[in-house]
Image (cartoon, rainbow, N blue to C red):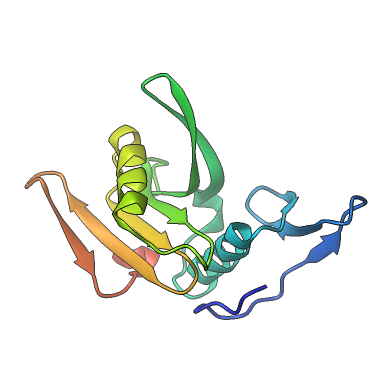
Length: 150
């Protein structure tokens, strides 16, 4: 897999019977297909937990939601201490450029969830923006804050 702009961590991978690879997802507590996007997700989640002190108990991967009657899945959702959505994270594979289309996708999810922070990463570039619902504005942050600073 591609080297990412994230710290290494002790991950678990294994080969499946069909010859494909799987990686252990600590949040879902199961083996999942090791795709380039999943490689980014697992590294980013570990970085959020270990470096930014996000509580794993308040995080979920591949969280289902319904928007206009259509089933969708958010890559990662982080809740506040009351369980309400606080952060939505959207991942792309390292070879996928982050474009306006990526932000449009995460904003659509946020129309349902109303999180205060949106993060997008392809493992090489990371963007975080804070939504101010009161003023109807948003601000891109220079770095992703620690959980206690959200």
